[in-house]
Length: 132
Image 1 (cartoon, one colour):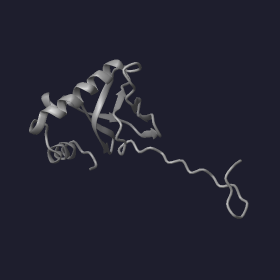
Image 2 (image 1 turned 180 degrees about the vertical axis):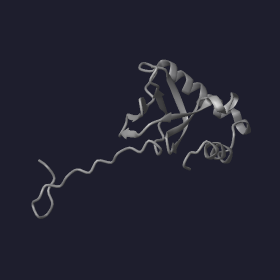
Image 3 (image 1 turned 90 degrees about the horizontal axis):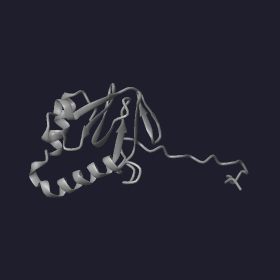
């Protein structure tokens, strides 16, 4: 039976839409060409979503920090232009991304001071036009 108020009117169920930028679960992005990448950091950007790939700091940030362009739509999975962002599946559904995320998580445990500080990450995102 639907929930009702004390006045006998039906109460609508308010559904909380998951916020792409508040998610703590690991996320991956499927790009228009079909390739998939793990998103280890993500930020709002006026043109879409700015995201960091796994091990981004070991390469050139001009290549490993990427912009998915387009309007953000949906409530999980999310569409960003022609790309799709979703919670990273298990080894059975997305084995390559799941293995990459496991390697990333193991690296972070061992990296110590090798991984850039939050301040450095924020500076990079601001330099790329992200909304922090």
